Length: 343
Image 1 (tube, rainbow, N blue to C red):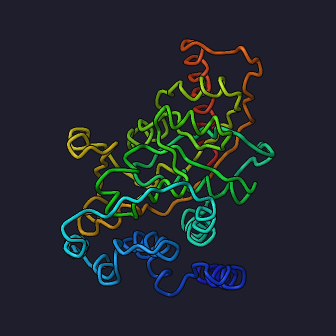
Image 2: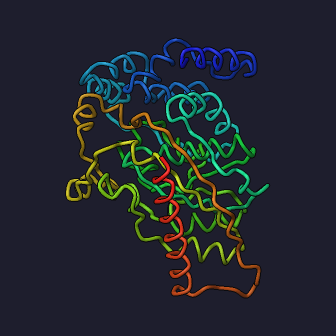
């Protein structure tokens, strides 16, 4: 059945994509179903639209696929670049590339691997701007966010931008794994107050995790427990009169199961979290699996819109914003408990 769906999608891409569009071939399908190959998919798609002499080459892609080969590939690329890091070019959000990435690469991953579903779509507003506030878990690459962004763009035609931890923009591991400025070009907004506020001021549709990095960092044991919500999104929603669309995600906790955050080691390597689980042994042999996650079913339950206050003189104090944030947290926690009881 999966092979039939894959063939149908491939035929659809060949019929509908423009001449310069990216078309899945046999090697791409192999990479999709072989975990160390996901990093190859991301980089091959980027290089199709962005000539990148500093990027990975075919020899290095081949090394990704064998145990320990990534380290040889990294050495090969470092020597090829003359003992330097990949160049950082200025990268601005490109909605056209985001759309191409979604239709040509995310589509098969979301539909056949994460089996993403939107529920209660009648609660979706007709248009933005919006703050889409969602629980966050998984202790891995933010597939729960990417999947929701793709599903919303497919359902409503929205251009959706996620708020992302700065480590996804600048950490050395990310710079070597993925093309420079990859996150920015795909629409990522740094999770810093000035960037967040600037994006809201432009009336964008933003994906936001009120738990912050505490969400994925809580690990497997607390996977169903919402951490404390930040208050900045409540205050900015009030200031710019932008409504909040609460969303509950069920299934993201299984993206990286049985994981525990090793805090001391995480701080040493300057990562927002560092999960330890049985899967980490595979990651040591295949570091390209850093963008991979376990197969799961991601269900998104859309709650009714929370309108922003329309009083132009309304500016919530921190105490009032904190109370509203925690009320929303309690409401979403009840919904999570309810949905978990159903499945």
